[in-house]
Image (cartoon, rainbow, N blue to C red):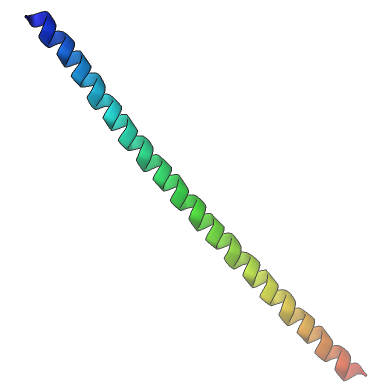
Length: 69
């Protein structure tokens, strides 16, 4: 009788540990995906700022060249 309860307890414990592990894995994957998304957004903002700065520099150079002529 006790062997049945022992084996059922082991099986139940393993199932609960597996469920806990899967939950933690899902949380980790969710966090990593969120971090990657934030990194992509920051990279695009940086790229956009570089494009704007390049545009403004080119505009300033064109204005200076127009004044020199």
